[in-house]
Length: 129
Image (tube, rainbow, N blue to C red; front, side, top):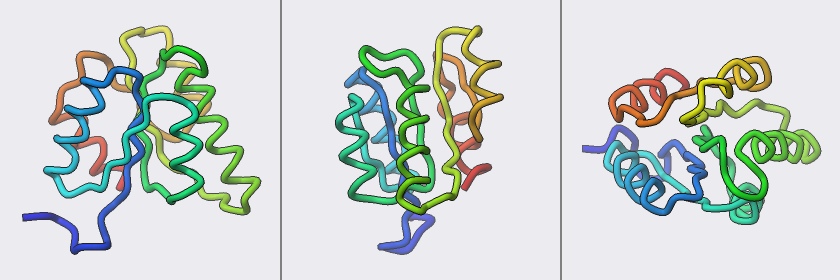
């Protein structure tokens, strides 16, 4: 049974260039009752944020083109410019420990390391939402 009534689901923007990660995390999160919008690249992210408001973002850090950090900065900048000043929590996913310190100082959110434990991911999401 879903935790949320229809139309009241928390919306999560899921950003990763790996299609397998997008599919598996989308399936996991939808099973938990979240509305998930997957985005595989910067252009898809910009399209998604122009159409919907999100409660949380999950983003891989290292991706081709604009990486997760640059993309998150752009999202926050666009929200501020649109008059929506609220910070959206961001859960970054990385396989590189050197990314963690920089991310904690720049963004509201958390960094999880690959391979990501599904239960830890779900608990982190619940903590922010």
